[in-house]
Length: 344
Image 1 (cartoon, rainbow, N blue to C red):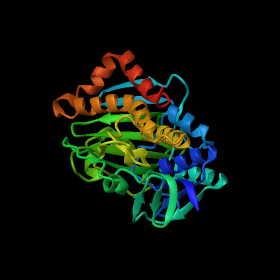
Image 2 (image 1 turned 120 degrees about the vertical axis):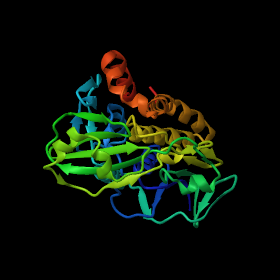
Image 3 (image 1 turned 180 degrees about the horizontal axis):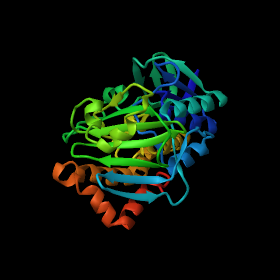
Image 4 (image 1 turned 90 degrees about the vertical axis):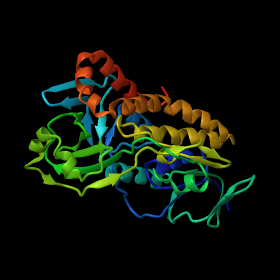
Protein backbone atom coordinates (compact mmCIF):
# COMPACT_ATOMS: atom_id res chain seq x y z
CA UNK A 1 0.00 0.00 0.00
CA UNK A 2 1.25 3.50 -0.84
CA UNK A 3 0.59 6.09 1.84
CA UNK A 4 0.19 9.78 1.15
CA UNK A 5 2.83 10.64 3.74
CA UNK A 6 5.44 9.07 5.97
CA UNK A 7 6.75 11.27 8.76
CA UNK A 8 10.27 10.36 9.89
CA UNK A 9 10.53 11.53 13.48
CA UNK A 10 8.03 11.39 16.32
CA UNK A 11 8.91 14.56 18.22
CA UNK A 12 6.58 17.58 18.38
CA UNK A 13 7.33 18.64 14.78
CA UNK A 14 6.66 15.15 13.40
CA UNK A 15 3.51 14.53 15.44
CA UNK A 16 2.12 17.96 14.55
CA UNK A 17 2.75 17.19 10.88
CA UNK A 18 0.88 13.91 11.25
CA UNK A 19 -2.06 15.68 12.90
CA UNK A 20 -2.25 18.24 10.10
CA UNK A 21 -2.08 15.44 7.54
CA UNK A 22 -4.88 13.47 9.21
CA UNK A 23 -7.04 16.57 9.35
CA UNK A 24 -6.39 17.12 5.63
CA UNK A 25 -7.64 13.61 4.87
CA UNK A 26 -4.21 12.21 4.00
CA UNK A 27 -3.09 8.71 4.93
CA UNK A 28 -0.06 9.09 7.19
CA UNK A 29 2.30 7.00 9.29
CA UNK A 30 4.98 8.15 11.75
CA UNK A 31 8.33 6.37 12.13
CA UNK A 32 10.20 6.94 15.40
CA UNK A 33 12.99 4.72 16.78
CA UNK A 34 12.43 5.70 20.42
CA UNK A 35 9.47 4.53 22.47
CA UNK A 36 7.18 6.48 24.73
CA UNK A 37 7.42 10.12 25.71
CA UNK A 38 10.68 11.79 24.64
CA UNK A 39 12.39 14.46 26.72
CA UNK A 40 14.76 17.08 25.32
CA UNK A 41 16.79 20.04 26.54
CA UNK A 42 14.31 22.84 25.96
CA UNK A 43 13.38 26.16 27.53
CA UNK A 44 9.75 24.92 27.67
CA UNK A 45 8.11 28.32 27.32
CA UNK A 46 5.30 28.34 24.75
CA UNK A 47 4.61 31.77 23.30
CA UNK A 48 0.94 32.77 22.79
CA UNK A 49 1.32 32.05 19.06
CA UNK A 50 2.47 28.50 19.81
CA UNK A 51 -0.56 27.90 22.05
CA UNK A 52 -2.85 29.11 19.26
CA UNK A 53 -1.15 26.78 16.78
CA UNK A 54 -1.57 23.83 19.15
CA UNK A 55 -5.24 24.67 19.64
CA UNK A 56 -5.73 24.48 15.86
CA UNK A 57 -4.79 20.79 15.95
CA UNK A 58 -6.76 20.04 19.11
CA UNK A 59 -3.88 20.01 21.60
CA UNK A 60 -4.06 21.83 24.96
CA UNK A 61 -1.19 20.72 27.24
CA UNK A 62 -1.23 21.41 30.96
CA UNK A 63 1.27 23.90 32.32
CA UNK A 64 1.73 27.26 34.04
CA UNK A 65 0.53 30.58 32.57
CA UNK A 66 3.23 32.95 31.33
CA UNK A 67 2.35 36.64 31.23
CA UNK A 68 5.46 37.93 29.47
CA UNK A 69 9.26 38.10 29.39
CA UNK A 70 11.64 39.68 31.90
CA UNK A 71 15.30 40.44 31.18
CA UNK A 72 17.44 40.43 34.33
CA UNK A 73 20.94 41.58 35.29
CA UNK A 74 22.39 42.44 38.73
CA UNK A 75 20.42 45.41 40.04
CA UNK A 76 18.36 45.78 36.87
CA UNK A 77 15.37 44.22 35.17
CA UNK A 78 12.88 45.10 32.46
CA UNK A 79 9.58 43.37 31.75
CA UNK A 80 7.37 43.15 28.68
CA UNK A 81 3.86 41.72 28.99
CA UNK A 82 2.20 39.70 26.22
CA UNK A 83 -0.52 41.92 24.75
CA UNK A 84 -2.75 39.26 23.22
CA UNK A 85 -3.12 36.77 26.04
CA UNK A 86 -0.77 34.54 28.02
CA UNK A 87 1.71 31.96 26.92
CA UNK A 88 2.32 28.80 28.91
CA UNK A 89 5.26 27.01 30.49
CA UNK A 90 4.90 23.34 29.57
CA UNK A 91 7.26 20.51 30.39
CA UNK A 92 8.58 18.96 27.21
CA UNK A 93 7.35 15.54 28.33
CA UNK A 94 3.85 16.91 28.95
CA UNK A 95 3.76 18.50 25.49
CA UNK A 96 4.94 15.31 23.84
CA UNK A 97 2.39 13.21 25.73
CA UNK A 98 -0.44 15.56 24.69
CA UNK A 99 0.61 15.34 21.03
CA UNK A 100 0.83 11.54 21.28
CA UNK A 101 -2.71 11.37 22.66
CA UNK A 102 -4.02 13.57 19.85
CA UNK A 103 -2.26 11.46 17.21
CA UNK A 104 -3.70 8.27 18.68
CA UNK A 105 -7.18 9.82 18.77
CA UNK A 106 -6.80 10.75 15.10
CA UNK A 107 -6.04 7.12 14.22
CA UNK A 108 -2.47 7.80 13.07
CA UNK A 109 -0.11 4.85 13.44
CA UNK A 110 3.23 5.51 15.13
CA UNK A 111 5.69 2.72 14.29
CA UNK A 112 8.77 2.18 16.43
CA UNK A 113 11.37 1.94 13.69
CA UNK A 114 14.51 3.77 12.61
CA UNK A 115 15.00 5.11 9.12
CA UNK A 116 17.90 3.22 7.56
CA UNK A 117 17.42 3.43 3.79
CA UNK A 118 15.49 5.95 1.73
CA UNK A 119 15.14 6.26 -2.03
CA UNK A 120 12.77 8.20 -4.24
CA UNK A 121 11.53 8.31 -7.80
CA UNK A 122 9.12 10.48 -9.76
CA UNK A 123 6.08 9.01 -8.03
CA UNK A 124 7.08 8.48 -4.44
CA UNK A 125 9.56 7.69 -1.70
CA UNK A 126 10.49 4.33 -0.19
CA UNK A 127 11.78 3.97 3.36
CA UNK A 128 12.86 0.52 4.47
CA UNK A 129 10.14 -1.21 2.45
CA UNK A 130 7.41 1.34 3.21
CA UNK A 131 6.23 3.56 0.38
CA UNK A 132 4.57 6.96 0.34
CA UNK A 133 3.96 9.76 -2.11
CA UNK A 134 5.89 12.11 0.20
CA UNK A 135 8.15 12.02 3.23
CA UNK A 136 8.53 14.69 5.90
CA UNK A 137 11.90 14.56 7.64
CA UNK A 138 11.31 15.74 11.21
CA UNK A 139 14.26 13.94 12.78
CA UNK A 140 15.65 16.82 14.78
CA UNK A 141 18.52 19.23 15.11
CA UNK A 142 21.18 16.82 13.83
CA UNK A 143 18.94 15.33 11.15
CA UNK A 144 20.26 12.13 9.58
CA UNK A 145 17.95 12.59 6.60
CA UNK A 146 19.04 16.18 5.99
CA UNK A 147 22.62 14.98 5.90
CA UNK A 148 21.87 11.96 3.69
CA UNK A 149 20.14 14.24 1.15
CA UNK A 150 23.20 16.50 0.96
CA UNK A 151 21.27 19.43 2.42
CA UNK A 152 23.51 20.19 5.41
CA UNK A 153 24.99 23.69 5.40
CA UNK A 154 28.06 24.30 7.53
CA UNK A 155 28.03 27.11 10.06
CA UNK A 156 31.32 28.89 10.74
CA UNK A 157 30.37 31.14 13.66
CA UNK A 158 30.68 30.42 17.39
CA UNK A 159 28.77 27.30 18.44
CA UNK A 160 26.18 27.69 21.19
CA UNK A 161 24.99 24.93 23.49
CA UNK A 162 22.04 24.55 25.84
CA UNK A 163 21.50 22.66 29.11
CA UNK A 164 18.40 22.36 31.29
CA UNK A 165 17.39 21.12 34.73
CA UNK A 166 14.15 21.33 36.75
CA UNK A 167 13.76 22.40 40.37
CA UNK A 168 10.90 21.46 42.69
CA UNK A 169 9.67 24.79 44.02
CA UNK A 170 6.78 27.14 43.49
CA UNK A 171 7.45 29.69 40.71
CA UNK A 172 8.26 33.16 42.02
CA UNK A 173 7.13 34.80 38.77
CA UNK A 174 4.58 34.35 36.00
CA UNK A 175 7.14 35.54 33.43
CA UNK A 176 9.97 33.79 31.66
CA UNK A 177 13.08 35.35 33.17
CA UNK A 178 16.19 35.70 31.00
CA UNK A 179 19.24 36.36 33.18
CA UNK A 180 22.31 37.76 31.41
CA UNK A 181 25.92 37.14 32.42
CA UNK A 182 29.29 37.54 30.74
CA UNK A 183 29.36 34.11 29.08
CA UNK A 184 25.81 32.76 29.30
CA UNK A 185 22.10 33.39 29.62
CA UNK A 186 19.85 31.54 32.06
CA UNK A 187 16.17 31.03 31.21
CA UNK A 188 13.75 30.48 34.08
CA UNK A 189 10.36 29.07 33.07
CA UNK A 190 7.52 28.17 35.46
CA UNK A 191 6.07 24.88 34.13
CA UNK A 192 3.77 23.82 37.00
CA UNK A 193 2.56 25.08 40.37
CA UNK A 194 5.51 23.33 42.02
CA UNK A 195 8.11 23.14 39.26
CA UNK A 196 10.52 25.53 37.54
CA UNK A 197 12.79 24.81 34.58
CA UNK A 198 16.15 26.55 34.34
CA UNK A 199 18.05 26.39 31.06
CA UNK A 200 21.45 27.90 30.27
CA UNK A 201 22.79 28.85 26.83
CA UNK A 202 26.40 29.68 26.06
CA UNK A 203 29.23 29.44 23.57
CA UNK A 204 31.47 28.28 26.43
CA UNK A 205 31.59 24.54 27.16
CA UNK A 206 31.19 24.12 30.92
CA UNK A 207 29.11 22.02 33.27
CA UNK A 208 25.57 23.15 34.06
CA UNK A 209 26.50 24.00 37.67
CA UNK A 210 29.54 25.99 36.57
CA UNK A 211 27.37 28.07 34.25
CA UNK A 212 24.70 28.54 36.91
CA UNK A 213 27.32 29.92 39.34
CA UNK A 214 27.52 33.03 37.11
CA UNK A 215 24.01 33.96 38.34
CA UNK A 216 24.36 34.35 42.15
CA UNK A 217 20.84 35.72 42.67
CA UNK A 218 19.42 32.74 40.83
CA UNK A 219 21.63 30.31 42.74
CA UNK A 220 20.35 31.78 46.00
CA UNK A 221 16.72 31.28 44.96
CA UNK A 222 17.39 27.67 43.97
CA UNK A 223 19.64 26.75 46.90
CA UNK A 224 16.98 25.01 49.00
CA UNK A 225 15.07 23.48 46.08
CA UNK A 226 15.24 19.79 45.24
CA UNK A 227 16.62 18.98 41.81
CA UNK A 228 13.66 17.47 39.98
CA UNK A 229 15.36 16.26 36.80
CA UNK A 230 18.76 15.37 35.43
CA UNK A 231 20.66 17.85 33.30
CA UNK A 232 19.95 17.48 29.59
CA UNK A 233 22.03 19.14 26.89
CA UNK A 234 21.73 20.06 23.22
CA UNK A 235 23.94 21.60 20.57
CA UNK A 236 25.54 23.00 18.64
CA UNK A 237 22.26 24.87 18.27
CA UNK A 238 22.98 26.59 14.96
CA UNK A 239 22.14 24.16 12.14
CA UNK A 240 21.67 25.07 8.50
CA UNK A 241 20.00 23.52 5.48
CA UNK A 242 20.73 24.46 1.87
CA UNK A 243 17.01 24.18 1.16
CA UNK A 244 13.95 22.57 2.73
CA UNK A 245 12.91 20.23 -0.09
CA UNK A 246 14.66 17.49 -2.06
CA UNK A 247 12.27 15.97 -4.57
CA UNK A 248 9.43 14.47 -2.52
CA UNK A 249 11.13 14.92 0.85
CA UNK A 250 10.37 18.02 2.96
CA UNK A 251 12.28 19.10 6.08
CA UNK A 252 10.23 20.28 9.07
CA UNK A 253 11.15 21.58 12.51
CA UNK A 254 14.75 21.65 13.68
CA UNK A 255 15.69 19.39 10.75
CA UNK A 256 14.88 22.30 8.41
CA UNK A 257 17.48 24.53 10.05
CA UNK A 258 17.73 26.31 13.37
CA UNK A 259 19.30 29.59 14.47
CA UNK A 260 19.15 29.63 18.29
CA UNK A 261 16.87 29.18 21.30
CA UNK A 262 17.46 32.77 22.45
CA UNK A 263 13.98 34.01 21.54
CA UNK A 264 12.04 30.83 22.42
CA UNK A 265 10.21 30.30 19.14
CA UNK A 266 11.27 26.70 18.44
CA UNK A 267 7.93 24.97 19.02
CA UNK A 268 5.94 27.72 17.30
CA UNK A 269 8.17 27.45 14.24
CA UNK A 270 7.81 23.67 14.11
CA UNK A 271 4.03 23.92 14.31
CA UNK A 272 3.87 26.53 11.55
CA UNK A 273 6.15 24.52 9.30
CA UNK A 274 4.12 21.34 9.89
CA UNK A 275 0.97 22.99 8.59
CA UNK A 276 2.76 24.54 5.61
CA UNK A 277 4.37 21.24 4.60
CA UNK A 278 1.04 19.43 4.65
CA UNK A 279 -0.65 22.15 2.61
CA UNK A 280 2.06 21.80 -0.05
CA UNK A 281 1.72 18.01 -0.06
CA UNK A 282 -2.07 18.18 -0.31
CA UNK A 283 -1.83 20.10 -3.59
CA UNK A 284 1.15 18.10 -4.93
CA UNK A 285 3.41 21.15 -4.94
CA UNK A 286 6.33 20.46 -2.58
CA UNK A 287 8.27 23.44 -3.93
CA UNK A 288 5.61 25.75 -2.51
CA UNK A 289 6.83 24.73 0.92
CA UNK A 290 10.23 26.36 0.39
CA UNK A 291 8.64 29.77 -0.16
CA UNK A 292 6.29 29.26 2.78
CA UNK A 293 9.17 28.20 5.02
CA UNK A 294 11.07 31.40 4.21
CA UNK A 295 8.00 33.51 4.93
CA UNK A 296 7.15 31.70 8.17
CA UNK A 297 10.67 31.86 9.58
CA UNK A 298 11.74 35.31 8.35
CA UNK A 299 10.99 37.15 11.58
CA UNK A 300 12.70 34.48 13.68
CA UNK A 301 15.79 34.32 11.46
CA UNK A 302 16.25 38.09 11.38
CA UNK A 303 15.50 38.90 15.01
CA UNK A 304 17.18 35.87 16.55
CA UNK A 305 20.19 35.90 14.24
CA UNK A 306 20.66 39.61 14.82
CA UNK A 307 20.35 39.34 18.58
CA UNK A 308 22.76 36.39 18.80
CA UNK A 309 25.30 38.21 16.62
CA UNK A 310 24.94 41.45 18.56
CA UNK A 311 25.32 39.83 21.98
CA UNK A 312 28.15 37.41 21.24
CA UNK A 313 30.95 39.91 22.08
CA UNK A 314 31.41 39.92 25.85
CA UNK A 315 31.81 43.69 26.00
CA UNK A 316 28.28 44.13 24.62
CA UNK A 317 26.44 41.57 26.73
CA UNK A 318 26.48 43.76 29.81
CA UNK A 319 24.60 46.46 27.90
CA UNK A 320 21.66 44.27 26.85
CA UNK A 321 19.47 44.77 29.93
CA UNK A 322 20.30 48.48 30.39
CA UNK A 323 19.45 49.08 26.73
CA UNK A 324 16.13 47.25 27.05
CA UNK A 325 15.41 49.17 30.27
CA UNK A 326 16.16 52.48 28.57
CA UNK A 327 13.88 51.68 25.62
CA UNK A 328 10.92 49.74 27.06
CA UNK A 329 8.64 50.35 24.02
CA UNK A 330 11.26 48.79 21.74
CA UNK A 331 11.74 45.83 24.08
CA UNK A 332 7.98 45.33 24.36
CA UNK A 333 7.52 45.52 20.60
CA UNK A 334 10.22 42.90 20.03
CA UNK A 335 8.76 40.53 22.62
CA UNK A 336 5.27 40.84 21.16
CA UNK A 337 6.52 40.41 17.62
CA UNK A 338 7.95 37.05 18.69
CA UNK A 339 4.77 36.19 20.61
CA UNK A 340 2.54 36.46 17.54
CA UNK A 341 1.58 33.36 15.56
CA UNK A 342 4.32 32.35 13.14
CA UNK A 343 3.91 33.98 9.73
CA UNK A 344 1.72 36.88 10.91
